[in-house]
Length: 303
Figure 1: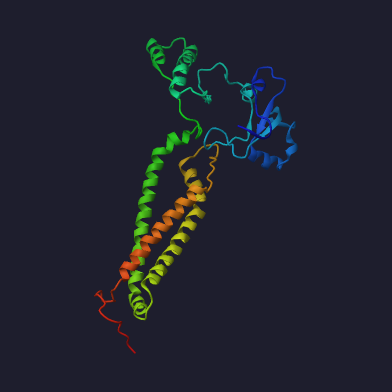
Figure 2: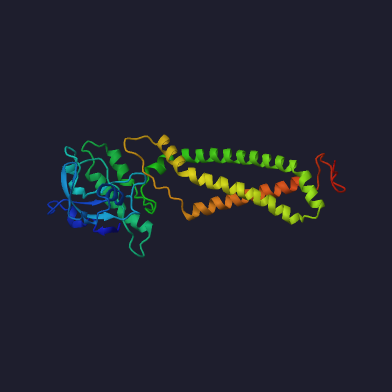
């Protein structure tokens, strides 16, 4: 993590007996609590009544390593007993730390996992309860370290809600398909009502290509309007859905930007829908009159 300005927490800040307690602010909290004042460096912030010196502000693109959990302040681990007293932070059988690391150039994931497995087994055995059964110790000795890419962060949400969200995505896809079929049916019905108009235009010399362009353009305008409406409501709808499926004490913090990939996807889907509806409307109007029989001459005009 690179700081927007100032510095980040270093190894010397996390050693017992460090000369001062330090803290790094998140970019959002810095703007919210300090109004973007770049003079915050060196000021004191109290974290659970523990005074800490502000040494830096994180970059605007950094929200932490846990997806959905955006912290306001980061402090060294050695401050945990002071901030949250009466907890055996450094002498506990509970695993509360997630470890992230970088691979050296030329070191594969498999090689790193093989090197870290004995260390993990040693840590688990060192913190094992004295009365642990022998078979449990044997199971600890058989475990193997598994490394996963950290590019997407640590996500308990992904592990917990990936399958339910796939079901929701499938249901939404089916609903969208049914809605498209209904809209396409309405488009065909509207085109069928315009058969006489289009037949008259063809009879007076209008080129077929021009009519096709008109129908495709009308369908494109409707499809793009629907895509723009979808982009407008996607963020509040996603936040509402996440608040419904994830109910906890801490609010869920998700960054849902409308990036280039999403725009291209919506544009592509809208254009495909426009082409299908436009060509379908042309086919529905092609060479037929109101009675459904092929047109064999100029349209009948009644005075």
